[in-house]
Image 1: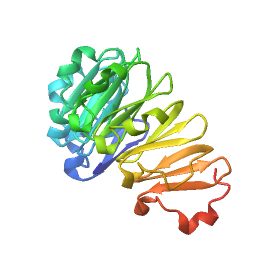
Image 2: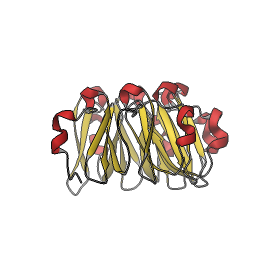
Image 3: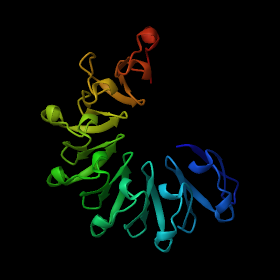
Length: 281
């Protein structure tokens, strides 16, 4: 994101600042920004949901700041998700409306008929993945960012959770198994750890890697080694919680100690404060 947007006062007005072409200048739509409930910010634009379910957009026109072409469909909106340059809105009836850069998820016409009874939409930097009420998944956007899941479509059943990093997706299914797709080097390929990905209860991500926590407190990682995809140097047992930065992970264990891995400059090495990291909650 390149701008901020704050909802102020009981009237639901919006104040913006930052890069003018990234949503920091909302003067062109200021009179429409009333009764705003939520503001969603992409890399270059903003979209606000008002109390009546209508949507107001501003910022870079080609990146979702101009929703004129779909304005007649933007009603009864309950939630909005964003890639770097496109938006996807879920309506009350479970349908989805998209706009912005067509290459990065702004054009969902190829999967329009499948986008029914959608519960939630998740996003990487350039693609969307929607989970429907029957646990199936629909994807669109840049194939390099996870917009094409055809190779694993047969596995995308009974999906309970979807997680995304910058260019890949990972799902947790009802049986605790995991399915991944997207950029192979960023976690879209988990084949080398697939047999270990059982009884998964949570998945966390850095920009280019994933970490799956299992019900027994162990952790499995994959993706770019330099971004946390390789945890072979640390002991990950009795883990209660995982946190992530852009390129590193930190795990809190049952005894209150902390283990870190990934890029040193992103927090992957806590050696300097290791003695202080006790009784962490």
